[in-house]
Length: 80
Image (cartoon, rainbow, N blue to C red; front, side, top):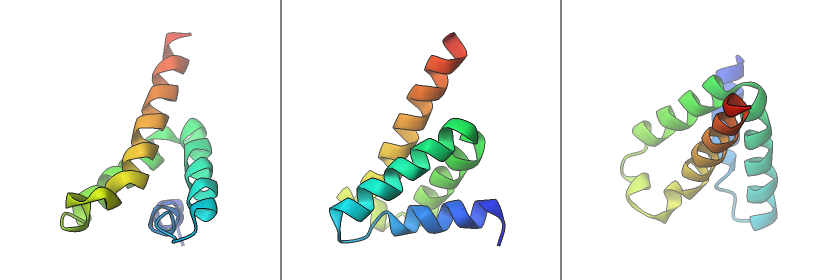
């Protein structure tokens, strides 16, 4: 299993019914995004495009949150 597959599995797991699990996985993806921003951002983008019906509802929240947070932190780092 390659790194992209692992990140995609984490994104899919972010939809767990348990909010604590969602938080831990989201935090993990944001942490990964700090070191491997291109991988996490492209995986979130890919997930959102592959799930158009799902993403028409609130269920898009985990990858959207991850995208926003990783981008914000990446831009702050670039500005330093």
